[in-house]
Length: 433
Image (cartoon, rainbow, N blue to C red; front, side, top):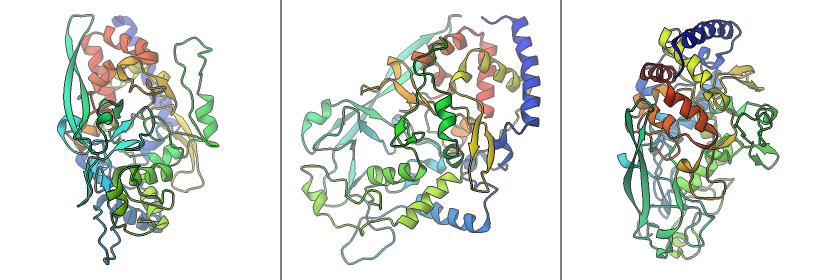
């Protein structure tokens, strides 16, 4: 365990660093936000938006929040075109109040990706809902497996892992044996700021061969000529691409980026179903939604000067969490409401091997993008049924830390070696973000 004497030195250092960083504009994202009710903490527009930008934000909000309806022949509606197969009828169906989705065990939409590559009959994702006269691809069954974790001090935390299987498969029962992975919708604050991180900043933070020998070997994901940064595997380079993909895979809505309905191989009824236009969401409306999710402000921290929060931040850094959850990233943008500066997102936007406990079974299945931590302390206030990590398995921040393995195993073990009071200080710091 970290000694008391060493711990107090960490607190002193943290106080100095905290004061210097605030003086230098280090916590820029915090400065840009206003205090809002906790349950709506992720739904505030960036305060730097101009009048026209705010109007565009409101348009995007409407198309993000309000549900789509199945297409009907002869009816002209701006929200026609749901499905034919889908997971949710609106973006907000998964991103509850712009936050995280419900954990699988709590009910609600489940995004289930096939990790061994597209299936000829099902594509890349199972759709468990469908419009009239079209069969859903399958149904989900959720079980929970308990995996106790014992701290060095003898205390035990029961970790829970959801096991999601596909039943009632409509186009071949081989899908019930396929390797799949649940992907829970994350909170979507600060995406415009993450988009403004230059590719070079991300690449410069990478060490794929672990040349410095610290056990951390994050690597960037190339998406064409850009560096990926969105999605659990950093598979998308822009907010627009991520938004268009979600419209197609999760709601069955075509766009200028994806004009073909999601109706794989044998799904003839899916292909016969009426559509809501070509495309079903226009380029302007898709761009407005992408702007909306880009311009959602990061909530301000509640009490960053509290002694337990400052101590927790020092411990967070001392045990090595900051090696991946980098507290500062440079941004550069021509948009006035972003400009140039630094943000406190607590991510490096690289993918890291997180060990077999979090692996999804696919190629590079143990690799996950470092999740930004800003706003994480308000996740439960926004959606009490949310979970942490890619599949929502962790009910608490403590459980999320204890699931870390692979490159993060050393940091996890150092957290576990702290006494209960110091572990609580680390959690206090995270809850303040």
